[in-house]
Structures are given as C-alpha cells and as structure tokens.
Amino acid sequence: MAKRILNVVTNVGHYDDPAHKTGLWLSELTHAWHVFEEAGLEQVIVSPSGGPSPLEPRSLKFPNYDKTAKAWHADPSRMALLENTKSPDEIDSADFDAIYFTGGHAVMYDFPDSEGLQRISREIFERGGIVSSVCHGYCGLLNTKLSDGSYLIAGRKMTGFAWQEEVLARVDKLVPYNAEERCKERGAQYQKAKIPFVSYAVVDGNLVTGQNPGSAKETAQKVAALL
Image (cartoon, rainbow, N blue to C red):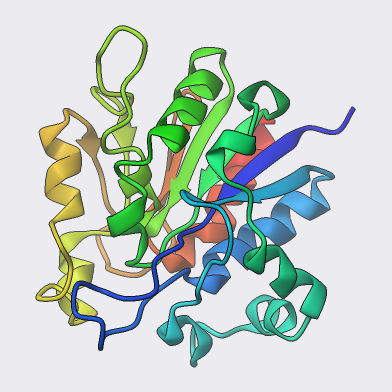
C-alpha cells in the first residue's frame, strides 16, 4: 500500500494590516508535491479551517515563480485542491505516515494555535511517523505538545525561516512575532545556514525541517527517503 502524506496550507490572506497580502508560498507546496509524487506517495491537503487557501502574491513573481509553481497555477484541477482543502476534523491521523507544513507568512497567524493540527502532528509523531515543515511552516510546531506535556520540538535540532531572512525580505516590521526566537524559547536547538536563502534542511529522528522557500525540495527529499 502506498505511503500517505498530509500537506498543510494556510487559510489566511493578509497580515494584521489587510492592505498587505500574504498566503501560501506556492513553490513550497509544488516542489514538495512533485518530490512526493515521484516517490509514489498519496497526498492530501489540509488547512486549519478547511476550504480555500489563498496564494502569497510574492510567490507568483520571479524568481520564486518557477516551472512547478507555474504548472500548478495553470492547472484548474490542481488549483481546485487549494479551493477545497480538508479541515483537521476530517482527518484521521492513522491514515497518514507523515505531515508536511508549508509556509508563507500567513501561516504565522493560523498554524500555531490550531488544536486539530496539533492533534494530528502529535499522533503521527508519537507513533514514529514523520513530522516535517519548511520555512514558516515550523510555526505549526511551536505550540504542539506531546502526551507528556513537553513541546514536540524541545531538545530537537531543527530549522525554519530565520529572523535575518525576515529583515532581508523587509517584512520584519509586518510579522506578528519572531518565529526563530519562539522556537528557541520552546527549547529547540535551532540551526540555520551560514548564508541566507540557500537550501538548508535538518533531520532529527522523525522531525525534518527546512529553512526557507529554497529548501522545500531538499526537505521533501529527506522526508521521502525516510518513508
């Protein structure tokens, strides 16, 4: 039977200031989806509330708007998957071998406090399945606790979008908090590449994390290899 992976996307379309749009960083889904597809994995898309997942406008521009992102954006059947995402209540974690949190600044708002996503992540992780994220996707792991009450990421090596990258992307004044700092506060052994925006992924047991949009493919390859 084919292994199954749950891809997590956001439902949020703007920062605190509605004039500043955000959403799913499309290539972080498409790069991983392509790798998982090639590996023969079955894929499902979930979001904190279910329903539509808006796209981050910056992810539809050069240099982020590459072949896989363009192909997805031009394919009505693929775009329909983002219009009709499942909600956590519709997901039985026992059906999945891994979960993969995509990014985009939007996830900073709706990923951290989704009890449904926390439940799914905890259940997959505790039975030895893979929990993974790329870029801001790690915001979905910040508040997830294991059955013993400890943070899932406590004491574990991991990465995610760095504060230095927020500054370079000129969104440090827009984001609601410093995700790198919160990650460290929860006891994670946060790591990052020496150079911003290069591909960088970290594996610690069944936790796999990637630093930035350019890390989606490498992160997915590491997840697929573990599966």
